[in-house]
Image 1: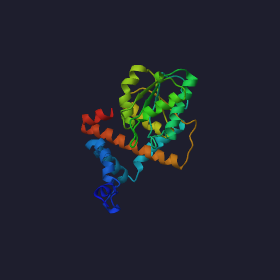
Image 2: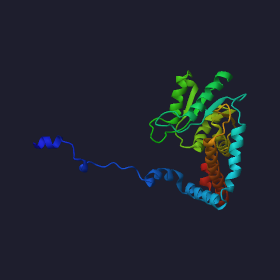
Image 3: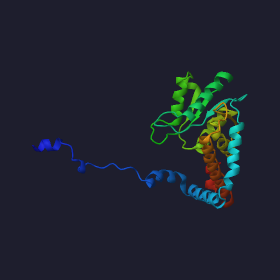
Image 4: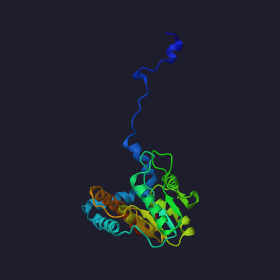
Length: 248
């Protein structure tokens, strides 16, 4: 074998670089950095409170999530802007919960007239297209004109969704309608009220279907609401302006 042949031949298996999966710490690193020290502290306080009360502090919040999911309308009599909350993409594709939200916006437009649509949501991990851009492309495929669909694609969670969209909403609407899945509406309306955003809510699903996955979603939403409420009270008690500005 000549030197050129050796140069072209692949490395033996033991000499090839080994691809390793990222460790848990490496996966959590960006998320923890996004939370910041105040977010981490309130997360720890929230978890500590849940553990010390054996989960009792979650119960009223879970009840709030369930009552909102059960009682939310899937139709609104009036509204001048339809705000669709984004949801994580699955392998770059719109997942069923997000599609339900987008389809509800289409239904409301057909029945209530040409109301503009604002889609919220940044880039999902592992995707190159934002949730908002994906949703906009979907609605255009369904027949909406491009100029009737606005997007906000710089946010990473529900609170950022609403905060970043607030200037667009207040400039364009007196009565915005927040569209999301039933399990998510309690968190949406709590956060919207927290930032002083007047709104209505509309459920993506026609009716509530109680199931094991729905029960888990209710508990998850109660957990997020618990963290938010603990963080809000902690920021007020400690007079932490930075934290208050972040959540209001």
